[in-house]
Image 1 (cartoon, rainbow, N blue to C red):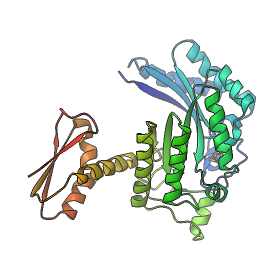
Image 2 (image 1 turned 30 degrees about the horizontal axis):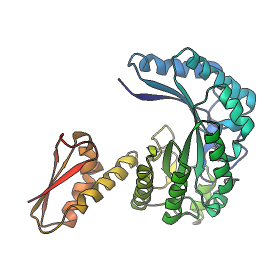
Image 3 (image 1 turned 90 degrees about the vertical axis):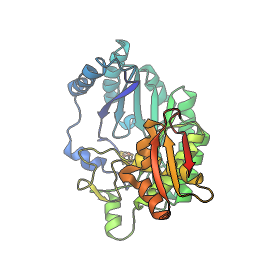
Image 4 (image 1 turned 180 degrees about the vertical axis):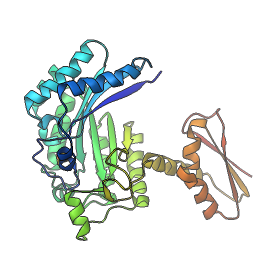
Length: 337
Ligand code: SF4
């Protein structure tokens, strides 16, 4: 039985008056027709036909793809009514939506309460005011604190989305944003490395030499440090890196930036590599790394990345990766011979 599943409803943000430099929603919106009521129902029914057969414990309708609370109120109502109807019939258990920090106020939250919305995700991206300004977000960090607080006060679960490698960003600033996020204490977070998408202001900046995206190693290291902050704070990291879609992927809309479809695995593998390497003390001929079966692929690393790392760094020693199911997930043991 699956524990949790989302029914994603993609609503490209046709009414968005903003122009964040990294965002290609306008390009996508120009290509897509807005979803009609019937199309939304059709998406939900298609997902439910599988999820209900599989006895999925928690099913959540997730409106994403723009700033939900910026859509005209009548349209919001139409979408929310459909979702609430599925909830009232016990077929769906939660409703999630994402929006901007400056599209939150008491009146908006009262309205979302009427439709039993459970989670509000804020596209925060950064807590650094210079990064917010250079990215043309149109709000400052003060606004993020205020809306986060309000969302929690009204009893919604709060989600926070952060981006790394935006114009003006540095590793220090990204890590600082993670610390500030942890202080706010959302239920979950998402971390996205910035990609240069076609049709965006960032693409123009990139071609003019005014912006350089992070390389993959820098992106992994920064994300790793942020991930650790969230893990220690007990905050669920529900996504790391952009999902591969019809638009996102190598040779698609990504103009620059080291897009990797398994970015999360790269980060988690690197975290495990650090744990294992910490235990390589004194002289040894061979190191045998043990982990639970569920950790084995991350232990070896995506594309055998960790194996290659150890073999390169310690050319006179050999390394083996083995399963020990006495260990729990994320617990490791190293035998040095
Ligand atoms: S990121 Fe969100 S707020 Fe910014 S332009 Fe895109 S849809 Fe609008």
